[in-house]
Length: 160
Image 1 (cartoon, rainbow, N blue to C red):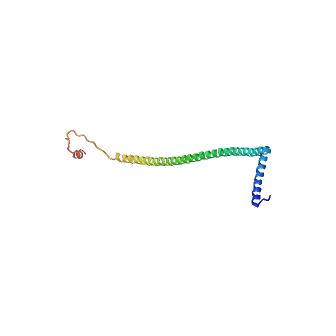
Image 2: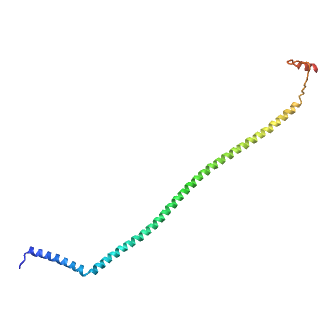
Image 3: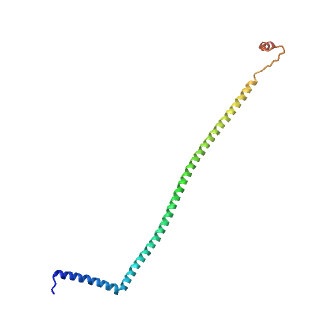
């Protein structure tokens, strides 16, 4: 029974393949416990990964909540700053208006003082002119026989 080399190789390959299949079959049958422990091992790994994922998801949600709150506060702060700047601008405009009104009041007071001084000077001039006017004699002559349109000047010279 001498086998040729090609037969030996095919016998050997068949035999090795049969042996591997047989060993695998025995392992599967005889070592269900090993398979179950392997399944339990991978189940534990999957559960551990799920727990790890849930922990990180909780941490992420906490960070996200904190980030959302920080963003909200930043936005509110920016709105308050804008409102503050707007109110400052309005205040500056109102201060300018107030300054202009005060300047106008000061100008009116100056003009009033100037007019009061002018009024006092005019009264003084009037009184001075009144004193000068008292020195002039005025004669009023009533005449019965003078017709309208005739001059009374010649009559005044005649009366003196």
